[in-house]
Amino acid sequence: MNNPKKSNKKYSDSATLIELLVCLAILSTALYPVVYMLQLSRPKHPSSQNEYLATLLAHHATETLTAKRALSPDYLPEIVSNSPVVVHKNSATPPHTLFDSLMPDGSQMNETNDSEVFWAFKPFTFSIDNYIADNNFYKVICQVNYTSNNMKSRIYFDKLISLNGSGSQANGNDSYE
Amino acid sequence: MNKKGAFKLESLLPITAALIIAVTLFACFRFYTVKLSPVSDVLDINAKYTDIVLEMRADTLITAKAVVSENKVTLVNANKENIATYAITDGKLIRTDHSKKSEKVMIDKLKTGAFWTNVKLPNLLTVRLLPADTAEIPFFTSFALRGYKHE
View 1 (tube, each protein chain N blue to C red):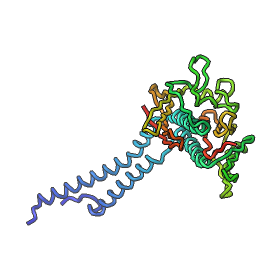
View 2 (view 1 turned 180 degrees about the vertical axis):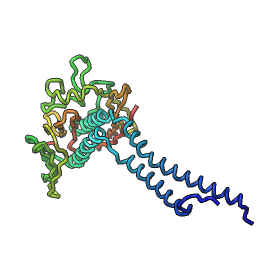
View 3 (view 1 turned 30 degrees about the horizontal axis):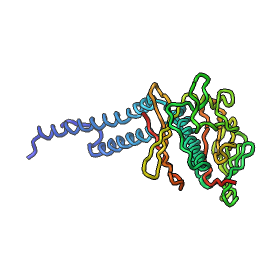
């Protein structure tokens, strides 16, 4: 049997449901400006340029290592920590040997021989570590360090070097601190 | 009995549901596609640089010799066949693939560019590209010529 009170209550509930759905539709429409504001408030990748330059430098280091070992199979890079990649006037530490031949004449880069690239590379430092990963392999880790938003960041490429001189296998990885 | 509206509940439900779904999908779509100009510029040049690195890396894996001239380098394999030529012309870096006989503009709006190998490391090709826009980062890296043979 139909109870008129129950029926009325049912219609009343239905109206509430429609209102709820309309509210949801309005809220969904309002999502767009919210999303746009989120987009505006996102950081504008301030570190991505530094990140990319660091990647190019790390790539240069591992490729130079490959080229040096192709000419001198016994070559192993010396371990350094936070050495500059270009010649600083006020720095006592010279660039690592992997950055010896940045210029066409085989010299190191300084403020006068290529000022544009020099200023781009000046904030970066280079660290390199190597250890025996296996009986037949050395693992070399080339790490480029930089500061971004007052935080120390780094990009590193690691490379396996065969001690038998039968070639090497390269891996590229990056990591952020 | 009170009248509750001009539309029936059954007709409003699918319309409202469809509207919610459509707006939500559109919002999600915009979230991934809206590009702010400073961000897109940075990502744009990074993407172009990545293309250059990948192409040159693939070419230098089989390169025995790099013939460098002003604003131009030709990579040659062990059979003395040309693999690819990279040339800077009118501020553009153009890669010519000799096997496919095709040309591709890798990047434009360059101020200068240079390629070199040096006496100490003849099997290392260094590439330096400077964009015309000084706010953009330079491209500077090297590639080992893995097919290099001592002469």
